[in-house]
Every structure is written in C-alpha cells, then in structure tokens.
Image (cartoon, rainbow, N blue to C red):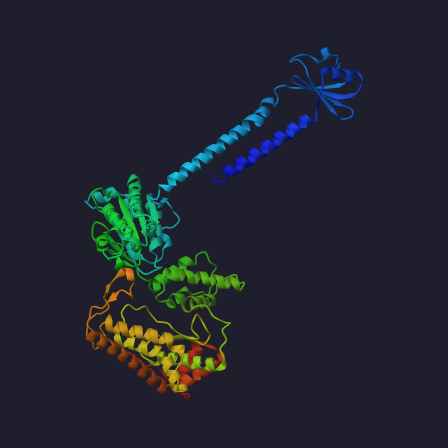
Length: 602
C-alpha cells in the first residue's frame, strides 16, 4: 500500500510518454487530399496503401507517408485508386481503436482519480492517528502454534498451573458444573531468563483462543490519561473476543506500589494502574477474560494487584536444577550437530545457578566457536569454552602482562585455589588460570558437586576465607597487597554483611536488618531509610569486620600449612598459564615434599 502512489506516478509518466510517441509518429505523416494520393498511384510513386477505417495512408517509394480521409464505408476505387496498380491493405476499423482511445484518454484520468483518493485517505488517516493515542497497541495472536509446552523443558509445576488455565478455556463447562470459576489473573514471577515470556507464548500456542500480548511500558505515554484509555480499549477488545487471554510483560513498569509521593494524584502511571485494577475486578468485569502477567520484581508491586480477585494465582519460576538444566540443553541442542562424545549431563553439572536463557546462550556460543574453527560438529571442548566465555567473560589474548605482574597474579590465584582446596566447606576447584578474562587478570573456577538450596554459616565463613586467599597469598609472599583483590574484598564483604543483616548468623542476634523503608522514586541506595538505631548499626559494622578478619586469618593459616603446594602451583601457572583436571589434582596431592595432602572431610 505504501508503494501504490509511486506505482501510479510511474504509470502516468509511461502513458504520457506513450501518447507523446504516438503523437510524434502521427506528425511524421503528411496530410494531403485523397486526389493527391490517386495521382501518385497513377504516376507509380506509391509502394502500398493502408486503409484504417476512413483514413487512407499511402507509403511512397521514397518511404515518405501521405494521409487522407475518405467517406465512411466508401470504396477507394471511386477516388480513382485502382487496387491493381498498388498493394492495398484494409484493416478492421474496430480493431484497437476503442482500446487506444481508452489508453490515451481514459487511463490518465483514472490514474489521477486513484492518486487523489489515496492522498485524501492518507490525510484522513493522519488526522485519525493524531487522535488515536488512547487506542491499545496490543498484538493479537490467534491460535499461534509456534511454541507449545512440549518445547519447554523443566518448569513442571508452572506448566501444570498454566495447563489448568488452558483446559479451563477449552472446556469451561467441565469446571462450571462443579461451581469452579476461572482465575481472573495469573502472575508469573522469578529471576530474569527463567522462561516467563516463553511460558506465555506456550499458552498462546495451546489455548486456541485470541491472545493479546504487550509490554506494560506501552500503556504509558507523554500525554496524560493515555495509559488508562489504552487499558480500557484493550479490555473492550478482549471482551468482544472472549474467551481470551491478555498477557502483560514487565508488569512492574506500571504496577509499582502507589503513594510514593512522585507525581501526586495525577501521576500517569498510577492512573494506568488504577484502571487495570478496575478492569480486573470492578463493576463491568468479564469472567472469560484472563490476565497473564510477568515480572521479576514482585516485591515492588502494589498490594491491590496481588489480592484475590485480581491476580488469583502466583506462579513462581525458579532457576533450573541439574536435571532441568540437562533437559533445557537437550531442547536447545535439537537443531545442532552435536558430536557423539558430547556429555550434556556434564555441562548441566558445570552450570549451577544459570537460567534457561543462559543455557541457550551457551549452546549458541558453542555453535559459533565450532563454526569459527571450521568444524562440522560441536565438540565437548566447544561447550566447555562457551561456559567459560559466558560465566567468566571473553578471553583477552591481547592483554599481555609483564613477568612481575604475571608472577603476582599466579600467586594470587594459587592462594584462592589452595585455600578453597583445603577448607572443608568450599566447592571443588575445577580450573586455575592467569589468562585474562573479562575484567580479571586471572581466575579460579570452583564447581559444586550438587545443587544446594540451604547454606550454612560455616560455608559462608569458608567462602569468605577463599575469597581473601588471593590477598593473603600476596601479603605472605610479597609482603605487599595489590589492587587485584578489589573484587574479592567486595564479594567477601557482601557475604559478611548478608550474614549479619539478613540471615542473623552473627553475635548481633537472630534479627533481620535487611528490610528497609524505600522511597521508590529515588532508587534503592539514595532512598534507603534505616529502621534500626545507630548503636545497633555500630554492632553490625563490628560483626562484619570480625567475619572479614576471621576469614583472612583462616586463609593465612591454610597458606602457611600448604605453602610448598602453593609455590609449586604458582610456578606451574607462570609456565603453563592454565592448569585443570588431573594435573591440578596431582599438584594438590603430591605437591608438598612428595607427601599426599588430602582435603579434610570436616
């Protein structure tokens, strides 16, 4: 439709050129009396004569043309032209005449009329669009079969919850007979990348009913009242097509708690939220319209959204466990040529804490690495490299350290590895390297043997000691510390603070100080207001410092006991840059004067 005006302009120009060419062609013919043509025939100067209706065109032997007119229906013999003296061609007077007349006269007129109509229509639609800010921009997916629940691995309980909604939409009488009412709203919440939007797509594919999808940010514009108007328009469309499903992604964009003090009573976001609340459970609600929403910030949502009658069901999506990660990897590996030696279970065990989106990215990065190496299959090494790239960052081969920095980095990473290896509550050391990745000059990679949901105080204390192991190693061997421990100290301090203020694992007492009154519009840090005294705050600071100091002493103690192993590991790192697997375990077990150093069992 956008190209129609250009096509019409081209046709007008073509018809004009065509008409001009025909006019010029006619200009080449000399108009004479028919008696002149008769004399030229008698003088044997005419090659042939073409009769087109009442027009007589004579082609002379010098290729010039003469044209004359005769009476309609009269024979040319009456004008003294003998057909025996010259070749006479008579054409049907009706062949092409009307068509040519139409092309020359009618077509340009029609094209101009169509062009004028399109211009008028666009002008009218422009005025309509100027007043259509209040219309919903939701996209309709009716019976889409692109994604189904079979395409989603893991998430067993969330899928079961949504399957009930789909069944209710398909067979409502089955539930109505028992007095059951369909939930008005289903809220999906969980960490980023766990599959909230993917589940919504599966509902659209399975339900077989109209499915409206949009982001919450699409409601709010710069004009006052637009958000509320779009909500009304969206629900009116949904009611006309009921039963149907409305999916609002990133609900926290408009569903944040009201009364924060920003914008007053005329706040556009609050008006939009108020309209959603009324549409979901007001005087004119439709029980056949289900609202499906997703967010990873349920803590900031307004309580009115979460009460029964609005979002009746809260579906929690958590990070996948090892079995679910393996199933997700299998799904994303369906269309990829994996080598027979690839062990996806091993990849699942090496990726604790990663979401489904992260696992998809790992499979994609492995395919990219294989393509760059001109391989025909994705190997296990490609998957291992993609994990490191995703978790630790891309390898920085261009970053070359001088020998002194490389030695310090080697002792730093060896300190992490040795402390982590010989403390009872840390994860096994998988790999140690002084090759730069991301912002780090080196890294020590630990992998848990199993997924954990509960963490003990002793595990947190050992993790703090392991994080401070690099700093303690620098101080032990070089009598000086560097900026390389910056991120380690930051992470250790965060663990210590959470132990004191959230988990109640310190001498301060079994209290939680993590909940704070927040001024939402100022953000978390600027708007925090502590709900405990300065005296208690000083006790918190002392407890955090004590955890940090105890961790440093524990790290130095382990380094002192296994100094020879640490030095041996550091020397290997300087030479080889990366050590892993059996070679790393061999250094741990036989690195100290030929004796086996086993990890305590606690």
